Length: 92
Image 1 (cartoon, rainbow, N blue to C red):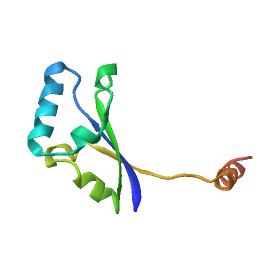
Image 2 (cartoon, rainbow, N blue to C red):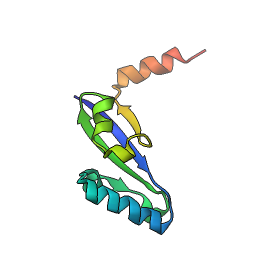
Image 3 (tube, rainbow, N blue to C red):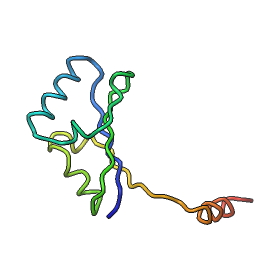
Protein backbone atom coordinates (compact mmCIF):
# COMPACT_ATOMS: atom_id res chain seq x y z
CA UNK A 1 0.00 0.00 0.00
CA UNK A 2 1.08 3.53 -0.65
CA UNK A 3 1.34 6.24 2.02
CA UNK A 4 -0.29 9.63 1.60
CA UNK A 5 -0.30 12.82 3.60
CA UNK A 6 -3.71 14.45 3.68
CA UNK A 7 -3.66 18.16 4.50
CA UNK A 8 -6.98 19.78 5.21
CA UNK A 9 -7.10 23.56 5.73
CA UNK A 10 -9.89 25.60 7.24
CA UNK A 11 -10.47 29.25 8.04
CA UNK A 12 -8.72 30.70 11.07
CA UNK A 13 -11.52 32.46 12.92
CA UNK A 14 -12.71 30.69 16.05
CA UNK A 15 -16.23 30.38 14.62
CA UNK A 16 -14.82 28.77 11.48
CA UNK A 17 -12.86 26.26 13.58
CA UNK A 18 -16.01 25.42 15.52
CA UNK A 19 -18.04 24.93 12.31
CA UNK A 20 -15.28 22.74 10.91
CA UNK A 21 -15.19 20.55 14.02
CA UNK A 22 -18.99 20.30 14.14
CA UNK A 23 -19.18 19.21 10.50
CA UNK A 24 -16.44 16.64 11.08
CA UNK A 25 -18.26 15.30 14.15
CA UNK A 26 -21.62 15.05 12.41
CA UNK A 27 -20.06 13.30 9.41
CA UNK A 28 -18.62 10.54 11.59
CA UNK A 29 -15.15 11.10 10.15
CA UNK A 30 -12.25 9.56 12.05
CA UNK A 31 -10.07 12.28 10.52
CA UNK A 32 -10.99 14.58 13.40
CA UNK A 33 -9.64 12.25 16.09
CA UNK A 34 -6.68 10.83 14.17
CA UNK A 35 -5.25 14.00 12.65
CA UNK A 36 -2.63 16.37 13.97
CA UNK A 37 -3.77 19.98 14.11
CA UNK A 38 -1.96 23.32 13.97
CA UNK A 39 -4.85 25.51 15.17
CA UNK A 40 -3.37 26.26 18.59
CA UNK A 41 -0.28 27.62 16.83
CA UNK A 42 -2.27 29.69 14.36
CA UNK A 43 -1.95 27.26 11.44
CA UNK A 44 -5.47 26.16 10.67
CA UNK A 45 -4.75 22.83 9.03
CA UNK A 46 -5.17 19.21 9.94
CA UNK A 47 -2.75 16.50 8.76
CA UNK A 48 -3.02 12.75 8.72
CA UNK A 49 -0.90 10.03 7.11
CA UNK A 50 -2.80 7.09 5.68
CA UNK A 51 -1.89 3.87 3.91
CA UNK A 52 -4.26 3.19 1.03
CA UNK A 53 -4.09 1.99 -2.55
CA UNK A 54 -4.36 5.33 -4.34
CA UNK A 55 -4.60 9.10 -4.03
CA UNK A 56 -8.32 8.83 -4.76
CA UNK A 57 -8.79 6.39 -1.88
CA UNK A 58 -6.99 8.85 0.38
CA UNK A 59 -9.32 11.65 -0.72
CA UNK A 60 -12.36 9.44 -0.11
CA UNK A 61 -11.43 9.12 3.56
CA UNK A 62 -12.66 12.69 3.98
CA UNK A 63 -16.30 13.67 4.24
CA UNK A 64 -17.54 14.86 0.80
CA UNK A 65 -17.69 18.58 1.70
CA UNK A 66 -13.92 18.59 2.44
CA UNK A 67 -12.57 16.57 -0.47
CA UNK A 68 -12.02 19.42 -2.93
CA UNK A 69 -10.02 21.59 -0.55
CA UNK A 70 -7.76 18.79 0.70
CA UNK A 71 -4.19 18.49 -0.51
CA UNK A 72 -3.08 14.87 -0.97
CA UNK A 73 0.64 14.10 -1.23
CA UNK A 74 2.14 10.68 -2.02
CA UNK A 75 4.97 9.97 0.40
CA UNK A 76 8.13 8.01 -0.24
CA UNK A 77 11.46 7.20 1.37
CA UNK A 78 14.86 7.43 -0.27
CA UNK A 79 17.80 5.16 0.40
CA UNK A 80 21.26 6.69 0.66
CA UNK A 81 22.10 5.25 -2.77
CA UNK A 82 19.01 6.84 -4.28
CA UNK A 83 19.93 10.20 -2.77
CA UNK A 84 23.45 9.88 -4.21
CA UNK A 85 21.89 9.28 -7.64
CA UNK A 86 19.70 12.36 -7.27
CA UNK A 87 22.66 14.50 -6.22
CA UNK A 88 24.84 13.16 -9.04
CA UNK A 89 22.15 13.83 -11.63
CA UNK A 90 21.97 17.49 -10.58
CA UNK A 91 25.69 18.23 -10.69
CA UNK A 92 26.89 20.34 -13.56
